[in-house]
Length: 174
Image (cartoon, rainbow, N blue to C red; front, top):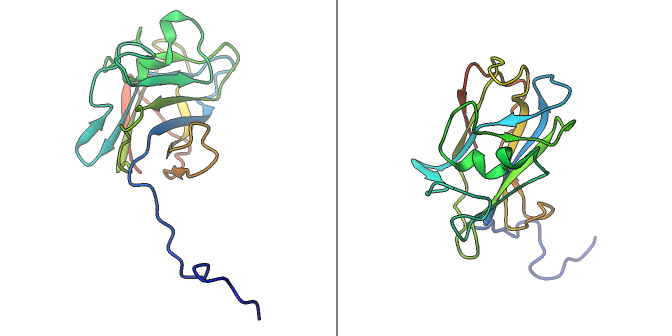
């Protein structure tokens, strides 16, 4: 029999963070297009409250928010566009050429974390109005206090084989 030091028994509770500074939307497959991945809008909900609670107008505007991604095609397809509350064909994040997977991440800023999300809404176009099969097909929302999402990660159930119509919004429970 192995003796465990006090406090390391099997029933030691693990306390989850009450707020999370970072949220990352990871896309592991698009609808089948060989060169692009598009995402129009992402909304994170805690109950009825939508996060971010303000309209994002730039990758670092308004402060303290910082929006980042694995990259983007050009200045007209920057990652902040998924949080700008505008669902038009012209306003979306586009992955770098040739990348069909990727992520968009939001840093809510020091002291501005959000509680554990209850749901999230993804808006994309699956009809080809701006390109066929460029929508997110397999994806997951993650939250953490680690900007690299290595430790302390809490994830939603992975969404597999999602489909989108013309600028359709799909809502998922966290």
